[in-house]
Image (cartoon, rainbow, N blue to C red; front, side):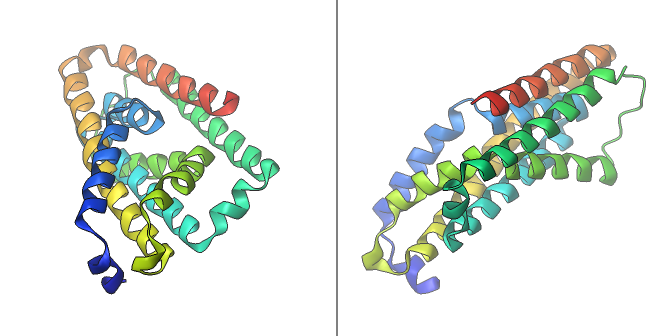
Amino acid sequence: MIETLLAMETLTFVTFIGASFLLYLTPGADMMFTIASGVAGGPRAGMAAAAGISLGVICHVLLAALGLAALIAASPDMLDVIRYAGAAYLLYLAVQAWRDDGTTPRRAGRAELSRAFRRGLLTNLLNPKVALFILAFLPQFADPALGPVWHQIIILGVLLGIGGLITDGAYGVFAGVMADRVRRNARLMNKISAVIFGGLAARLAIT
């Protein structure tokens, strides 16, 4: 793995990071989920959700490197099962947020942060579009002449996950800070989070 890393060209990393940065700036499910988590639970919850999403990305990368993602992608029924499970989970989060009247004290304790982390992880793992994207995106920057392709996919995937943690984390923290300033109307913040979660569920189920 180290030999493959050293063999990869600097231009490849620069191009990959540049392309990834453009993706980070494009509104998507991960961005919206961290924003909703920050709005609902504060800046630390937004960061925890981003960490869970990044771990989910790395899990997808490992599946792609092992070839399992290609097998899943070849089975439309399996993709549908994962997609609808993800949509159902997001809908569940939407209902929870909508029913929260804002009277429950907000605590950024370990349990709350762990819950935000788990939600981010599950949301990402249950989104088959992430697996398909990784299968299409990462191999474009791999060169078989430099070493095992799966080594390169893991290396690039880790970079992708780290970049996502930084950018999505920034979105979540910013949303949490802004939400804390208007926390007096916590019920409205929960409604906003519910609408975002519900929109993500509909998008995942329909597309």
